[in-house]
Length: 387
Image (tube, rainbow, N blue to C red):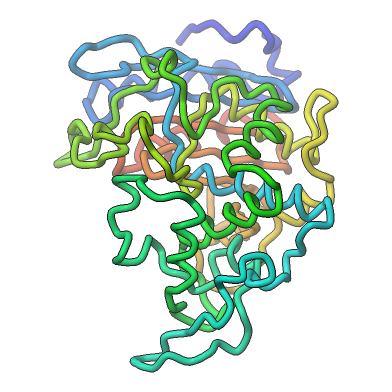
């Protein structure tokens, strides 16, 4: 399979430590999924040793119109937003505005007196939840917004302050730190702390402190109208075929472009491109800086990307959890090597950062359900390593 490598990538595999012919199998394999009809289109990016080795777009932005998918397509990356919230919190920690072991109630007084639901009994937990608990999904806060605002993710009709006030009055499900429970409400709470201590709206903090310095020009919580047409159609896999995701307001519903939204959806609101995400992840791989812009200290990067959950059962075999990053603990997480960290998103998007091989892999689709395509991408990616 012949294809054009990006000009900024050297034609020789020696520089990127990857076999170009093998990397060339990525778009070929992805096209086979498009031809089979399980996915509309896929954008992939592979970087090694600080250089983009390959970037590819195959398939369509929309199955019906068959408009060609371009590498600069803007995807909803959903839960891949979570590590970005944690990066923002770590920046504030470096400024001395918070500590990981701070009780949440120190910064958000509405959390004072929060109760634990023990069977049918409400009682005080043995300790209050901390900022670290929020980042590691060990706070006991519920996965999704409580019943009173159950429609939040579809309507985005309340402010972050209002949402977190309601979350603060929700009992936690277990003693903080004792279990792992993936928690959107915990990340929303973390974002509210960023907003309060950062002195500006949460989305403004991300824009001014992270996206602009890193040159991430297509990454937004609220995308501008002139870029809406670059966003592919969202699908859901039904009986092995993608169905237009009209049932999800964030998919092909009223909130696809966040038009009129009040809630910034910090647990999953970001839109981004492969090129922008590469810049974010290369900053992490570089120990916190890119092109002379330091976002985090090397120590913060190390802290974020080590396992904080011990032997707790987290998100899959061989996996543990860092500070809003999933981290590979051992070979059961194959093909990932130990210490690889990353995150996925609800519409099938995924990225990995592998410090051992100085490797970044980015996989972007707009389809909930199934991960055959992602697994194929990962296997080819690791199979292409030459050193």
